[in-house]
Length: 147
Ligand code: HEM
Image (spheres, rainbow, N blue to C red):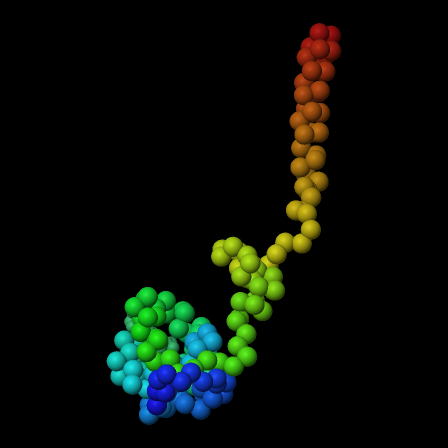
């Protein structure tokens, strides 16, 4: 029941209430789309749309697919309204460690605490050992071989 022209405000539970083959809405980001007429034509199949509709928020599923720009421009024709009091997920994620403020490869990785681990005792001992060996060789060559 696309309501062209008038853009209304809906909640995610409103969307969940429209998750059937005869009446299917999906919420993607802050927008609500009536995809009832698109169900049969959707290249990804109607089941994914129905499932995304029943979940109340299809944003993640939609983005995971990596829809083309032509798919994104098609969406406008199914737009019926917006989600009221929409909070972008990036706003809350950015506040957590490895949120959207981190470079992509580092997202979700634990942030190291404090300075890097100090060198082990062996790292300190090895130069001393080499020095001792050099001294022993010098001592042997200087005093032992001459006596
Ligand atoms: C108004 C909303 C949507 C529109 C207009 C739309 C449109 C399209 C189009 C045009 C394609 C063909 C490939 C492309 O051009 O990217 C596609 C593929 C697909 N879509 Fe959607 N889509 C919508 C929502 C969704 C949602 C909510 C899901 C949730 C899972 C979904 C899942 C898929 C999948 C799985 C494919 C198949 C990808 C493949 O086979 O490579 N779509 N969609």
